[in-house]
Image (tube, rainbow, N blue to C red; front, side, top):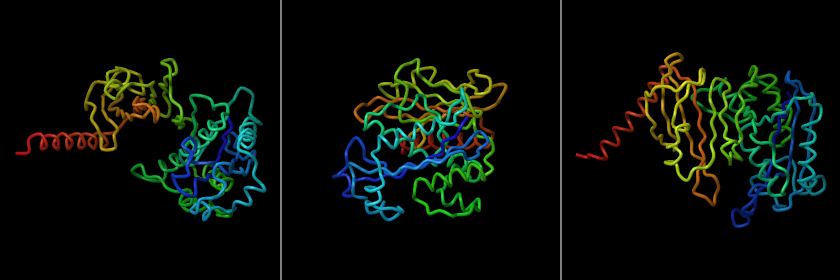
Length: 324
């Protein structure tokens, strides 16, 4: 397997929402990438500047942080379709027969923006389902606590890597992300992929139920409402990621403040399993939702935290219902 570590820079309307195109609020102006082999060794480098069509004038904030300006983009940039086609062809080069490449990004925004720009120019879509690696999250799980994440610069400083290139150029940020993979002692992370959420299953046969990295990922088709989704047994059941059995109920589904729902079940062989559901809107023009569900084993401390949140929520409801 090869790893495509890429980063993007993009521009937006310099006058705000009044000048924003509804189908493409962010226009890519640079693609930068490094190609790593299965040993995480660098075997290639790619860079293209893109001459913007929708937003030729750089937004004030973006202009402040970039290392180039409108003249550079106009004189050195190519059109997006050419740049993206070259990039995707480059991704396939030097690929061992029968193997695939996977994207690595710092955060989840770049892959979403890339596909949005591709859709705007009616380019062929990326494969579905699309697995990739969020290096920011993998780094945070190793070095930070309580689900926190950090900026690329902070991660580089944390690892005491040599800062020999300016940030906020796509090729340079891709370089630093590659260095974190190579020097950050992240270990083997082949099983730590996540699924891209730009597209979701449209047919039942395309639904995702995937076991990896000790967890279960489930992504469903559309439902008319959250209530309809929860009526589906495959959605509301909590399975054991280790043996696949249905767990016995310990904590029934309840809502967290962030809009997600949580439940805990117990596998008699493997202990407590926590399921988290997030409902995602199917589109801006529809009230339908699809389900993104994660099931993972938890220890006693985490179980107590979830139980405390559930009990506190029940207490608040009781006070509201009976204020006297």
